[in-house]
Length: 170
Image: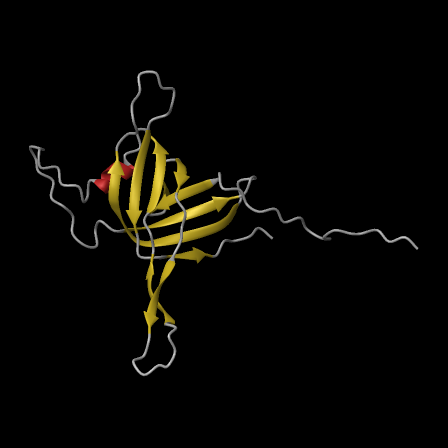
């Protein structure tokens, strides 16, 4: 009797691609970002050894959680969203009408990152909490012989993130 090896039966489950996503601030989709750095979290390790411990090996305990800044890269357009947000903290002393720096919590925003599949259906979403601009680059390098798109870069510091439930059409 011959048996045929069967692979996984059922629905095919390919991993999602990383090129289709949207950035939403205040319920409004912002400039079309071409790139976003990774969302990650690190739990610091605290080494400990009791004074009366006979072991020479340190004990490890979980410490504080750190969330590295997230960087968004966008093609320079007439959309002023990133620039206006960055200017809430950047102090332009050379301006004739001096802009005052905004206070808490006005410069902080929550950001949603929506990941789409190849068909444009939302498959994952994340919310970054209490974000503020920690670095802003107006335009990328200029080159007379270049053929690249101008890029603005926004580095955002945040206080953590969570995954948001996505409604499935099933």
